[in-house]
Image (tube, rainbow, N blue to C red):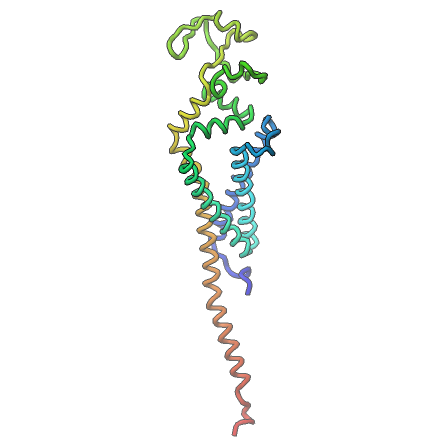
Length: 265
């Protein structure tokens, strides 16, 4: 007997909502990485096998996209095998996150290494947003542009006055910056690199970004728990009906084997 005609209950709507949420999370990740690859020079190295950060994020995005779509279609069509596939994929995702955390601890990869590799694989648009919000320039500072043909974005500059002072309290004369700013004499380069500030931000906000990553795992765990609950409920509701049918068939068999009144002695 098929499960499709069974009553899935209101938990089906909860699983649908969680599946849709997972699906849109995957769409956001895939959309962002598509923008990064389309506007970055690293797209030429995509097939080189060296963009670990990019591969990991894209794989996560596609996994969330496909798994959310499977769960969404499975609950709407009330297809048991799709829900089972969604449950198995969710369990694999949770195990993968746990395995990734254990691997990072075993390999002892530092936050600064992750930040540096991530910065190299980001597009200039994302770097500009970081430079603007964190008041920094480049990963190690503006000196990294000295031997590069890449243009310095406006986000690397900040306004200054004639008697402005540096962060260490030393005075900065207007003439000191005229030769470096050229067409922007009222602007000066930010001297602090974004790598230092990003590392500091990750260390100070460890609770926030760890909680953000844990939220994805929590959504997957909740969806897996709801899917398991629905499957167990369907199995439980099937047993009495199957037993009743067996008894009915046995009773019909007994009735067929009983002798007719005319055959009685």
